[in-house]
Image (cartoon, rainbow, N blue to C red):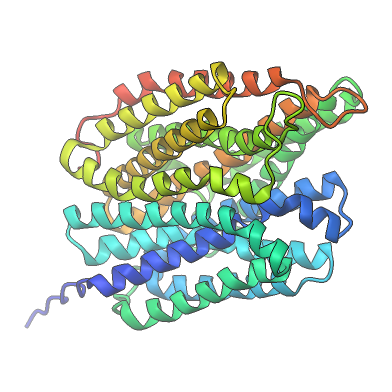
Length: 465
C-alpha cells in the first residue's frame, strides 16, 4: 500500500504577524550603529578607521551568513534554522549591549550579523505554507516591515543613546528579537522532513568570500588617499582580484558550494542581483549623504540639524519604506514584478537627480529621501519576490539569499563611495566638505540607477509569477 505525504500546514495570520514582528525587531537592531557612530567613537575612544570597521562589520558577516542560512533552510527547514540563528543574534545583541570596549562590541556585531539570514528563511517558511498568490503578499509584508524596522531603529537610536545610554540602544531591540523569536517558535508549524543534501559548509568558499569582502571595503576606504598611498591601494586591488578569482574557481568546483553560481547563471536571478546591487547602491548613498547634508553647519550651505532633528526629518522616509513592501507585493501580484521594478527605478532615479540639482531647503531633502525610500522598498521587494517565485520551492532560500547578499553589498559599497567623496572634498584643516561633493554623489547615484532601466525591460514578463 502506498502512502502520500500530508501537505504542509497552512500559516495562520498570527504566524505571519510573528514573522513580521521579528522582521521589525531585527531591522531595528541592524540599524542602530549608523546614526550613533559619532557617540560610540567618543565613548569608546575610537579612531575614524575603527569607526569605519564597526559600521561595516555587521554587513560583511551578514553577507557571509545569508547564503549559508538559505541553503540550510532549504535542506533542514526554515523554522528550525531560524530559531537557532536568532539565538546567535540575541547573544550578539546582549554582548553589544554590555560591551565595555571596542573589541567586545565588534564581537557582538559579528554575532548580530547572523540576522541578515533571517529574511531568506522567512521566505522559505512563507512559500512552504502559503499558496503562491498569498505568499507574494506575505513576502512583501515581511520585507517592508524589515525595512521599516531599520528606519525606526535609525530614528530612535540617537534619542535612546542620549537620554538613556548606548547600552540600552542595543538592549531594547535585542529584547524585542527575543520576544518575537519565542512567538515564531510557538506559532509557526513544525518543519517537514528536510531534503537530503551533499556535503557540509563550504569552508574554503566562506574564507575566500570573507577575504573578498574585507579587501573590497579596504579598497574603498583607501581610495580617497590614492595620491598619498598608491602602493598599498594597488596591492589591495591585486589582492581583491586574487580573492575574487579564487572564490569563483572554488565555488564552481565545490560539491556543495556556499553560493550556487549555477543558479546565478539563470537570467531572472542574475538580473535580479544586478538590479538589487544598483538600487541599493543608490539608496545607501542617499541614506549616507542626506543626514550629512542636514548636519552641515547652517553658517555654510547646510542646516545645522542635531541627531534628534535629523531623525524627525527622516520620519517620512520611515513611513514610505514601511508601506513600500506590502504595496510592492500587491503590485507584483496584479501587474507583475517587472512593472513594479520599472516604476520603482524611475522614481528613484528622479529623486536622486532632483536632489543633485535642488537641495537648498529642508523639505527638498525630506521629500527626496522619502521618494527614494519608497522606490527602494518597491524595487527590492519585487525583485526578491520575483526571484523567490521563479525557482522550485526547495531552492527558495538559495535564490533569495543571492539577491539579499547583493543588497548588503550594494549598501556597503554605496556608503563607502559616499564617504570617500566627502573625504576627498574636505579641505585640510576643515571638517566641512565642499557642497560639490554632495552634488556629485547624488548625480552619480541617479545616473547609475537610471542606467538600470534597460536591464529591467529585458526581464521576462511574468517571471516569478
